[in-house]
Each structure stands twice: as C-alpha cells, then as structure tokens.
Amino acid sequence: MFQHRVEMDKLDLPVKRIARLYKSLGSAQVAMPGYPAQPVSAALCAFATAQGIRAAIGLNLETSGKLVIYVCDKAVPRDRMQRLIDEGLQFVEAMGLFLDDMEFHRMAADKREDLWNDFLLNVGAAPPTPSPKPPVQYIDTGSEAPSLEICGEDLHPEDSSKKAVATPALSPVAAASAPTHAMANNRRSQSPADARRMALLDGVGRFLASL
Image (cartoon, rainbow, N blue to C red; front, side):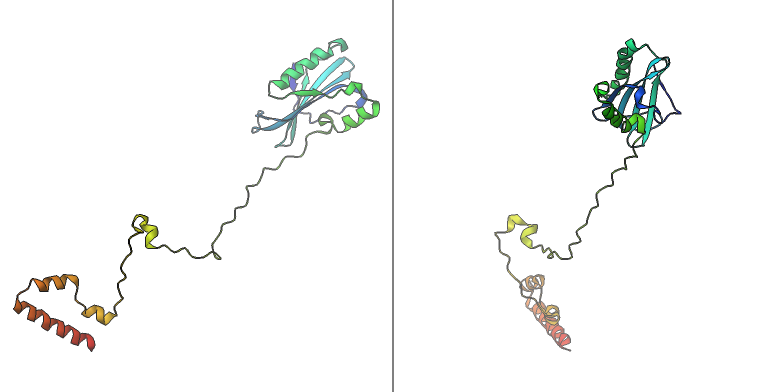
C-alpha cells in the first residue's frame, strides 16, 4: 500500500540504487486533497534498500508547483518487484494517468545517470504554471469611420418604391402667416360673413408679422 509522505518533496537517492523508472505520457485533470483541480503528471520509481525493493510515486501538481510523493509502506524481495510496480501503476491509473516504462535498467550507465539527473522524482516539482491571462480586447471607437446615416428607406424598406413629395421649407414669418390645411377646410364650410371675418384676421396677422 502506498502512503502519502508529507515531509518529502523529492527522492534523495544515488542513481546506483534505482531499479526501474516510469513516467506518465501526459497529464490529467486531478483534484488532490487540499489543492484545486489542475493538470497533474506522474512518475514511478522502484529502488533498492537494505530490506529489499521499495517504490515511490510522484504526482506533479503543475499549476501549484508541488510534488506529492507516495511511498509503499514496506519493502519486498527483488523477485516481487514487478508485482509492487504493478500496484503502483494501478494506483496512478485510477487517476486517469498512464505510465510508460523508461527501460532504465537496459540503458548504459551514463544514460541512466543523465535520465535520473533530470527525472521528476529526483529534481522535485517544476515551477508553477502561471494562469493564462485573458486576451486584451481593443474597442473600436469609430473615430476614423464614416458616420452612419439612416434614411427613410432604412426605416421603412417596404415603402422604398414610393417617392415622397418634397415640401418646400418656409421661413418663420411665412410659416406663421401660412394657413393650415384645417383652416382651409374650415373656410370652405363657413358662411360669407365668417369668411370675411377670417380674411380680416389673416390680414391683421400678416401686418403683425411684418413688424
């Protein structure tokens, strides 16, 4: 059984004691106790001790920059090493991670040393991954864009075929003295006396407007 070793942040072992190395092919989103869910990669190491072979698992919390280490609670004889490794692989695979055999034991001595010097369980956690910044959004103020003009055809596209008759603009004085459509209608229905009264009022209005 693998136990969490809170006091450990890496394995401090010489390369000659390393028997097998495994490394995850990628990362998976994992929520570890006490940490937010984040990408996690993993590594496994089987190593020799005076009592036999032990194994350690390192979970690299990529966003937090933390290496969480689990170590098997007891050593096993060398002929049971693969069974111990399989238990470690199952432990990691339960988190959605799959480990690849680095074929460490088949490498030349110098290759083994180079690999171990850069291995996760030996060097510790990688620096925290900074959170991605949101992209900068540029707002177009339209200072250089032509002004948008809306015509009657834009508001009433269904009436675009009908041409509006332009009405000439009147000056303020003429507008004040011009009879309205309602007044013209009223004149047609008025008696001669009323018509003369309205004509007199129109004349007074024009005289006042000319002052």
